[in-house]
Length: 177
Image (cartoon, rainbow, N blue to C red; front, side):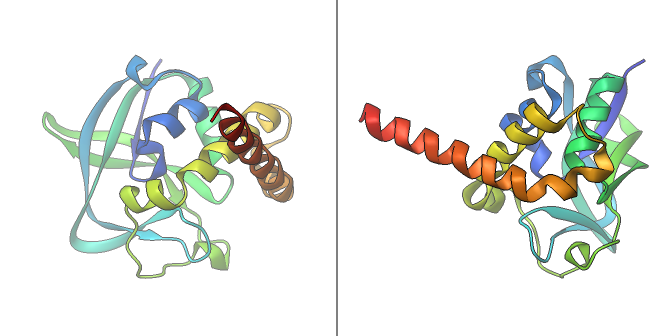
């Protein structure tokens, strides 16, 4: 059985998607989709998005089909327990489709509504390099080793390892130049 997910945030980015899922984005059925009566806002303390109900507004996102159960587990781990997987109906060129979507849980102040819009272009400029390094560390060293609901306990360690990874890459680029 395969699954569909609707992405409205950073996992629309092919590079991050491939790190998290573990397969090339070209292996999936991807199409544009719209979620009605919502907007995407930036989290208070992190450069990540959350959906907020907003009658009359729309969110443009990416519908990904052909995901296997283990890929849903990988995505769920990456999203952490701060996001729940819910089923939403999105609109596509061929009509409405039910798809899974990770929605902020609102369990922490950092996840609260901010009223500040989130855009993937801003995220790419401001946070993509760090997010990709953090995803590499989290998925490569922690996925399958710790439960999803404990990843926050390791996040400082993940951030430190990601910063080291980025510093090593910068040093390698400098050595080549």
